[in-house]
Length: 591
Image (cartoon, rainbow, N blue to C red; front, side, top):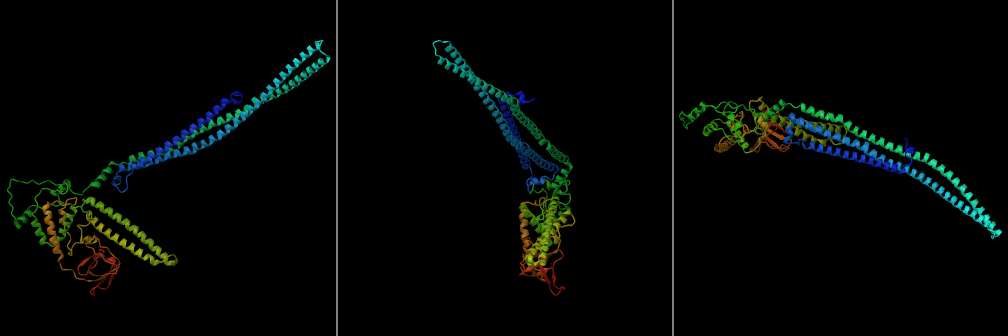
């Protein structure tokens, strides 16, 4: 089966067919190109979809992804992102292995087709030229034969006419011979041209045309094979990513199987557990008995002894607060404020309790306490634990920085040409100061955390000092009377009139507290570093400043000092150099 023998006379149709083959190849290239664009667009849309539903950083949505269902959804989003990447791989492979390759092949195919058909047209023009020469020689031979026949007839006519001279007859005879000679020459030329044309025609139809058509056939068959291979590559580009896509889908299934409803339920408990006990039974109030009350102190005290004070720690009506709106107090009989006032007057350490009450009232106005005391116990514990963890991370970061500076300083000491070691002293002191601050903060929050977890019975004077919120000069422990008046959200539930009365009483007691005789100085100290006292109970000092010491460090890391007999507070012991009086064993330095 050869186009040269079977289609020897279909040159024009072959030319049209090969052009159609090239057009079909270009159409397939366009199809693959559009497929790659669709894959890229699909991958982009998948990535945008995955990005759209990703949790925003530092937002409430990020906290929601601790649940296993949300984690599974996040894993699904990540797998979809990888899934989109595989479609990008499909597009890249199709572009590099099919589109670019076929576009280059089409250009080569066009050049080869043009060359083959150029050779075919050249051979065709040559045979047409030979045919024209043969026709010309044939017409000349025919004309010469006719002229020779006419010349012979004219000679015979002249020879038969007796009136014609002998010279005219001889001339006619010579002319007839000349025409016969010309006809013989034309005949020989025609025979030669005919033989040459037949030879050329045989070579054209049996050699040139078959060879040219065979090249065209091979070219067309290569085109067909090439497009078939491209279709296989097209399918392989999809098949290559199927295992990875399968892994993505397996990841989604695995994430779905990792959902634990029990764990999510436990997380809900941890997120919203208040730590309060459920409310106890409500006592029956018998309104049939007449209520006889007096305003004397005896009757108030007997009434107090007859009816125990409601506290959050026991099963009492105060437990109803978790189910009541904020700033709404349960309707129950309260002790007269005058009786509590008498208790404050007879017990001086309760001033601390009263100040805690004042801070509780300030919480009601919207201020957030540093120790998270406005939160329920369980939530407060979680917040404090998170704060301690964050502070420990900051301490580790600063410690690493201090170690790096120390190593750099050692290098400078060994190799002075690399740098001045003294230039790092200020930075080293600054980092050390930051570490000390962070450690104090950590101790403060750890004390609060220990209090919440039950390791400490209450907030001691030491932890109060560390927090910078030391309120008085007495050493008595702080009572919990303020907490007894607080609701779980830290707000007070006293009536508005009683709140105003408490504010007035707190002001009076602050004045009485401030009028106490100051403690005597037990030595002096020199500030080694500048300290900014921003918390209540602390005092700011400047590097090099001399101050009076009125209470030395009791092991909590704080020293109590005074400036100008009217300003006193606590500073970190490591920030000052303490010199005790003669009664002490000698000068002590805290670094």
